Length: 42
Image 1: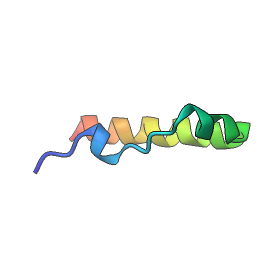
Image 2: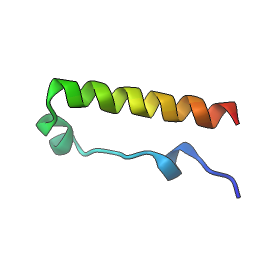
Image 3: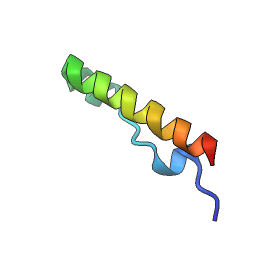
Image 4: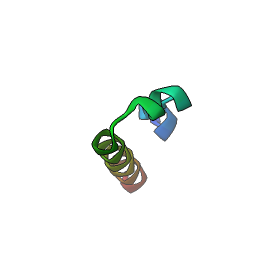
């Protein structure tokens, strides 16, 4: 079965994003970028 980025992505609302600390935002971006890279390499 194929897995898409949307299947594994954790999407945040604007309100949720606004509540994150800068370090949490950076971690989120890094994890999402890593996840995207892993999926596109399959």
